[in-house]
Amino acid sequence: MKTAVLTLTFALTFAFVSATQAQERFQVQLRHQVETKPDSARYHRLERDEAWDANKTAIIVCDMWDSHHCYRAVQREKEFAPRLNEVLNDARQRGATIVHSPSGCMNAYAEHPGRQRAKDAPAATEYPTDISKWCYQIPAEEAAAYPIDQTDGGEDDTPEEHAKWEKQLASEGRNVKQPWRQQIDLIQIDPQADYISDDGKEIWNLINDHGIEHVILAGVHTNMCVLGRPFGLRRMKLAGMNVALMRDMTDTMYNPAAKPFVSHFSGTDLIIDHIERFVCPTLTSDQFVGGKTFRFAADKRPHLALLINEPEYQTEITLPRFVEDHLRRDHRISMFFGSEDNPDAFPGIEMLPEADAMLVSVRRRTPPTKHLEVIRNFVTSGKPVIGIRTASHAFSLRKGDVPSGSADWPAFDAEVFGGGYTNHYGNDKVATLSVVDKSDHPILKGINANELTSSGSLYIVSPVNAKAKVVIEGVVEGKAAEPVAWTFERVDGGRSFYSSLGAAGDFATAPFQQLLRNAVVWATKAQ
Image 1 (cartoon, helix red, strand yellow):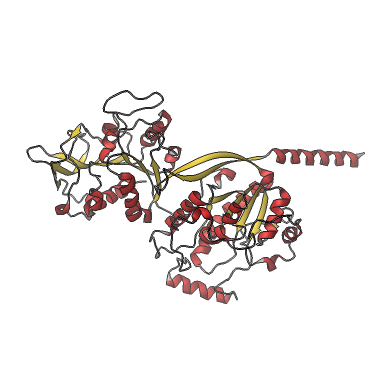
Image 2 (cartoon, rainbow, N blue to C red):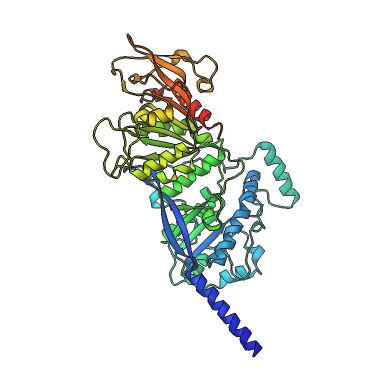
C-alpha cells in the first residue's frame, strides 16, 4: 500500500512538473533595427515582445572554452560566464534545451552522457543547405559594410600581457595558438538533460527531434564563432529558425588598434548593431534571471542618446558622422530619428531611459504624448542634456494647434537650457564669435578662440537665465551681442549645455567639433 501511494505521489508530481513545463513561456523582448528609409544608412532601434514556448526553445553555448590565445579574452569570458550559467540553469528548469558547443573539444567529452545524447539524436529527414559548414555571410549582409577590421585576429592584449600569457600556456603544456581543451568549468553541464556537440548536423538533429522553433546563441566570439559556426546565428537564420543573440552574454575578438579605432567594447557594440540590422534580433540575460543587463566592469563608457529630428540643418547626416569620428571610441551610442511616416514621432524612444545623457537636435516637433512623456521623464530624472541649434524650439509650434494625441513643451528652452530663444537675425548677417569665459572652462578646452566661426544665422536668445554661464557669444553689425554657448544647472539638478551653433558648415570646423565633444564629456562627467 505504501509503495502504491509513493508511486502515485511520484506520478502526480511528475505530471505536475510536466504540465508546468508545458505551459512555461519565455517572455522575451527582442531588439532589432530597421532603416529610417531605404538606403539612408540610418536606423530605428526597435523592440518587440514575444512569448516563446520553453519546450521549443534551445540555447546554444558557443565556444566558451577553458582557455584562449588572447589573455584579455579569457578574463572577459571568466567575468560573464557565471551569469551565463545562471541563465542556463533558469532556462533548463523551465524546459529549454541546452546545447554546449565548445568547438574542437569533443574528445574531452567522449564518455559524457551529454555527448552521447547528441550523437544518438534521431537523424533528420532533411538538412538545411551547408549546415556542416561555416557561414561567412548571408544575403542580407551583402550590401552592408562590415563595421570592424578583424583581419589581425582581434587580440587586444598588450605585448607584455601576451608574452606572459603565452609563457603560462606553454608551462601548462597547451598549444599556445589553440589552447582550449574543454568548456570553461564556470558553466555547468547537466548530464541528465544537456547536449554536447560542435557538429552542425548533430545539432540540427536534436533541434528537429525536439521540435525547436526558437534558438538563442550566447558565448564567444560574436564577430567570429557565434556568427559563423555551422550552428551559429547565420546558419540558424538561413535554416528558418527564430534565432536571437543574447547580446550581454558575448564578446568580440576586436583590437582597438584596428579600424574603426574605437574601444574594445564599442567594437562589440558595432557588431551587435550589424547583427540587429542584417542577421537577427538580440535579447539580454536579465529577461531570464532578473536584475540588470550584464556589463563588463571595465566598460565605463557613458551612454549618450541622440534625438535627431529637424528638416533644416541636415543633422541626421552631420551628427552620426560626428559621433563616429569623435564619440564612438569611448561612448555607448543610441540614436533616435524621426519617423518617415510621422515626422513628429520617435520610434524606439521607449529605450531612452537606458542612456546616461541626451543630445537634442530637434525642430518644432509635437511628438505623440507618450513619446514626449519619456523625454520629460528623462530630463526630470536629472540626467545631462546637450542641445544644439534648433533644440531651443524643439517641441513648440510657431503657430497652429497641437494635433490630437500629441503634446508640446513650449518651456523646454527655458526649463532645460535656461534660454530665451525668440528669433534669429538674417542669414546674410555674418556673426563674429568670441570667448566670454576666460577661466579655462572645460567646455573650451583645446579650442582656439581665434578660429571660432559660425555658418548659420545668429540666434536671438537674450536674456538667458541668470544662472546660465555663458562661454561664447556672437555679434552682428549694429546689434547687441547674443549668447552662443552656455552651461546651465537645472531645477532638477541636472547639467545642461546649449549652443546655437550646429548648422552644417559648423560641423566642418575643428573648434565646433571640439566644443561639442567637450560638452558631452563635461555633461557626463558626474554620471
